[in-house]
Image (tube, rainbow, N blue to C red; front, side, top):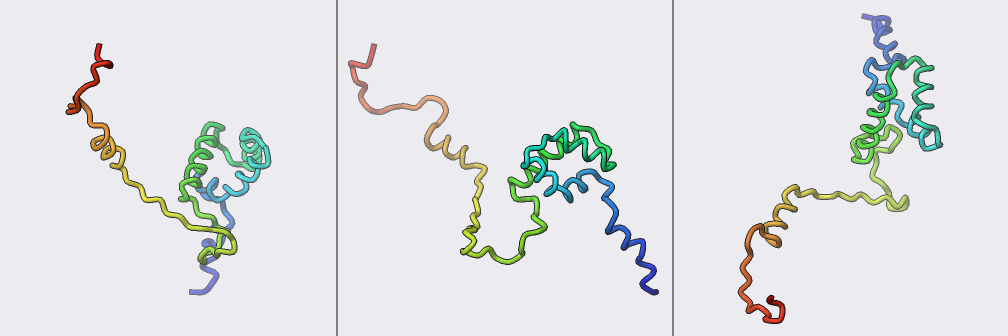
Length: 129
């Protein structure tokens, strides 16, 4: 089998993905740059329609919110980032936040127990009615 059999697979490199979210995720850096530059989401939506991306404004707004959440959570990979360790000269420090989903429950049960709490101290007669 020769290399000519891969022409259709190679053509996929230049085609847009069929799913809109995948297309927006692929072009997120351009969309984010336009929004940071001061353009509104309506203008971005109009340009997407001009480029042949058929989607409603509400769907675009939903996807942009999702992409922003993913980016804030660190789930959205930066395709232009280096894979090496961040150097201290760049001032990049990696910090891991340990989440404990039961921490609030433990704190409430230890410090603020629900129900009646008996106080063994003798009450101040001036504070009694």
